[in-house]
Length: 188
Image 1 (cartoon, rainbow, N blue to C red):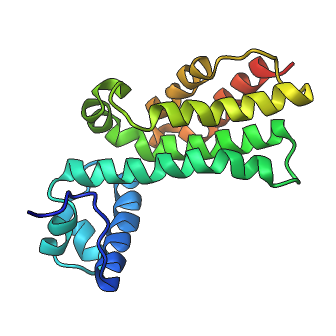
Image 2: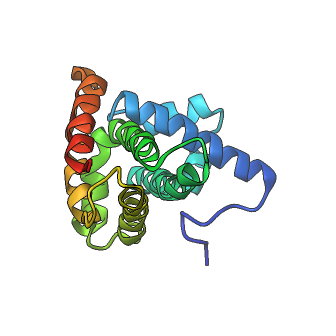
């Protein structure tokens, strides 16, 4: 029986190929949602068969990118708080900036992720993502920079607008303005 597509390969060259594919695919799909798998394989320096061994469908590739990127965001929240040069409000802003960057990458593939996770209801990362938001909100409430009692799910709903901003139409500037509004609403 073959391992599931998201299983991590064990050979060094297989791991290297997989990581190159993911890196190239992230950039290619951020640039154009219609980027072909053949072009991604070529740019990653692997054959199309190698790409398909790791990711048998376009959706499998998109979902693996999603899993990797969302886990990075989840892990990043406590890291920002642990970096003592960041006050909780600054850590929240920096984390929001990373979420906005991810939103630009997710823009063109949001429908695939939404469908595969039943609109988020079957997403194993949903609760951990909420906990990451809660960690940042609690730290800000504890130091008095954020309102106490903020609901992480409410903040997630506000952030969800980021995946709907077209990066090709002033997305970065619009995301910055929206995040400023969100942060202003969270401040004590």
